[in-house]
Image (cartoon, rainbow, N blue to C red; front, side, top):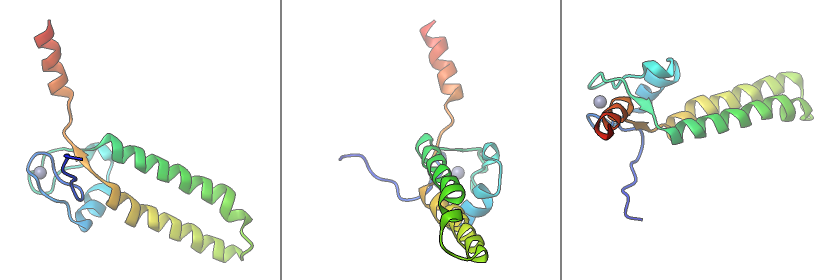
Length: 117
Ligand SMILES: [Zn+2]
């Protein structure tokens, strides 16, 4: 595979590598359309791939909480902890680790369209 594998979330405009804290504060707790690079302040979007991973993980999380956790042979209070831990893994481990950014293509697509006409 000749393609260079980028490690972590990198701003496609300035190359800034997002720290874990920036991913939590600048991405997890904000609406997705308002994600801005902390360095160059450009609005950036998560890549299609990382959104897909995020949705799959969220669906698995919800399935686990609705169908698996209630049937576990543990106390109700333990179930609450398990749900919190699952949410914690999703929010603090899975999403920050799988997050990648890509350039928003709307303008490029418009230009292509104009050129073809
Ligand atoms: Zn940037």
